[in-house]
Image (cartoon, rainbow, N blue to C red):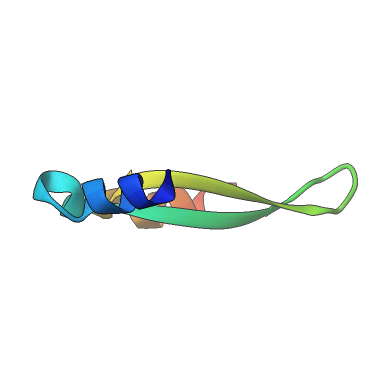
Length: 51
C-alpha cells in the first residue's frame, strides 16, 4: 500500500505535497507518539509549529 502512495505522489500534482512525521509528547503519560500527515509544501512550517 505504501508503494501506491509514493508512486501517486511522484506523478502530476503530487510533487506539491510532502509526508510529514511529527513526534508529539503526551501531557498525561509523557510518552511520545508520532503524527503523520500529507501536507502541501507551502504549509509544512505551519504543521510543524502546531502544538
